[in-house]
Amino acid sequence: MNAHTHHDVVIVGGGAAGLSAALILARARRSVLVIDAGAPGNAAAEGVHGCLGNEGVPPHELLAAGRAEVRGHGGRIRQGTAVGAHEHRDSLRVVLADGTTVSGARLLLATGLADELPSIPGLAAQWGRRVITCPHCHGWELRDRAIGILAGGLDDVEMALVWRQWSANLTYFTHVTPGPDPQETRLLAARDITVVRGEVAAVQADADHLTGVRMAEGTVLPVDALVVSTRSILRSSILTGLGLTPRHTVVDGRVVAGYLETDAKGRTSSPNVWAAGNITAPAAKFVEAAAAGVRAAIEINRDLVHEDTRRVKNAAQDWL
Image (cartoon, rainbow, N blue to C red; front, side, top):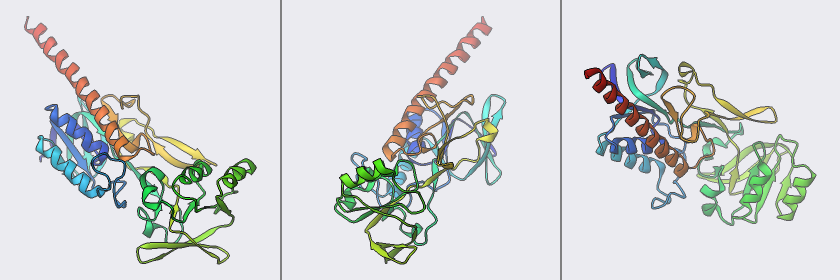
């Protein structure tokens, strides 16, 4: 691939949103290139859940199948990391970490987010297995188990109440937060959710299984899984050159998520640039991200059709 390969569409991100968009565009007979850094946000998960026909399939297997489908329809996938992007004449140019560039008439950002975990010893080693976030992703596998909820994110009490659907054995750890207010305390008590006040010092595990939470004062409380709130960080370093500014969700003065704002069809405020997936919706599940990629791809193809039509019409008028 030379230094200035041009495509109809360049997609930055090879996860659910990016590959789904690439497949739609390739099937629309568009030249499409996916820049894939190989670091999907769900890489640590044991399986993808709620994906009809693919329940429990490991993420790497699902994405590998997706890449094969894109290539099977003429799409191209390149391993690499996009480090910059900017307008260049009538196209968008993407700069890769190896110094090469590619360009496209349209650009789709599907870089996803990086999860920053709470800084608690032992927690990261269990991430995606027994340290998790989403009840609709992992609740079935953890049904009737002892589950801890670590306070510190958005709507923690609401999350505890939702997890009560899967297990009656729940413990809400206030950790370094002030804890639930009186109304929230009554709601938790109504569902028999135990509240433990005090700082969590470490997560304990035996081989691949989480066994308990050790409090700062030394007490160890047994749990089989721990629900945490992560800080979602935008992966993309290419927004500045496109004139795009991320938005932030703030809880108690702390940024808990960054995201890029688009219209309902995925179009950003930058000309000819779309975005889809977790970069626009931090809490989106795999199938939601894939659907957003499909929606953006359809709109991108429609936009290109209109441009193709204008070009042909103008050329005909010039000839006359």
